[in-house]
Image 1 (tube, helix red, strand yellow):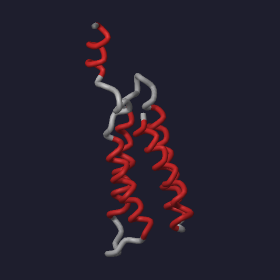
Image 2: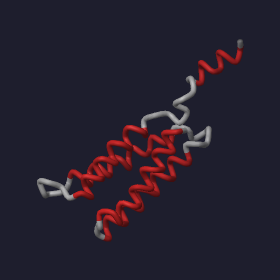
Image 3: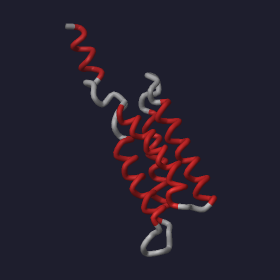
Amino acid sequence: MWARIVELFIAGFLIVSGWIFQSSSFLWIFNIITATWIILFSFLSFRHRLRKIHLMNTIAALALAICAFIQPDPPPPPVFQNYMVLALLLIMFAILPTEASKAPVPWRRFYMKK
């Protein structure tokens, strides 16, 4: 559950980063769409039936990384450096299961039978 909370913080920072880095209107729209994607799939993963849907956040991380890589300038502007850092953080947290602090489900079933 803590990994999903961190993803929500990453989405919040992505929204706020438009003010911090003074980005263009296209990047504002990109930030809002990407942050909405992250928030949606982070919240949906709290449902037991949809517990693995948080892996869809890797698509948002790939979109951020691609946007950071397609810049023609050799030293990318700070907004694109921010995209790359957020993409790496998001990939790192997106692969963690929602119940990462608990034992795997088969182990819990085994111990409940005892």
